[in-house]
Length: 184
Image (cartoon, rainbow, N blue to C red; front, side, top):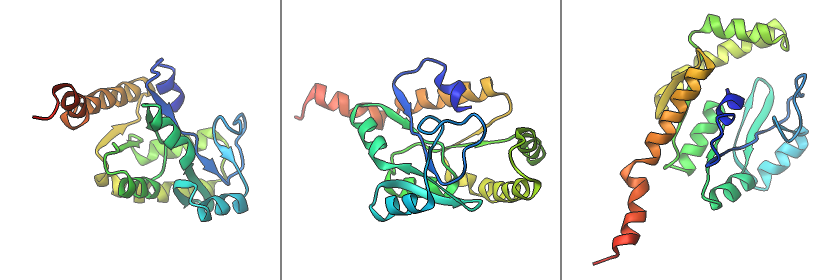
């Protein structure tokens, strides 16, 4: 999904690479897919306040390094985070103007099929992921939008529509016009 979204050629938003303590899957590259670090290094980043959000998911830490997000926002670009629900709620608490999109599989059987198809996890891990997904779906009401990831191209199109719509919100464009018309 992430790859397809960024292959559309849009340059006015950037993908934030998450940090994790899990082992790389076949074909994943450090600094491209994730920053793969030790548990000790991740916990040091937490202690130093260097994480925008973080959570433990199926016995591994996942999180978003704060430095990259701040640098990208300072360049006037939107930042796209791919994070689980607990991390999203941390971001919502700290960034109330952020837009939250819940990406969901069509159903749990399809999710199980996809996880098995990866060929990277044992059945006990897959079952943990399914159980975790049920809890995450319950949290969907805390998001602004829900996108079903049935066909990748359709899901990408839906996300692009959300981005375009959000950029047209009066609260986002009004500061430019206030500057143009000045205070009276």
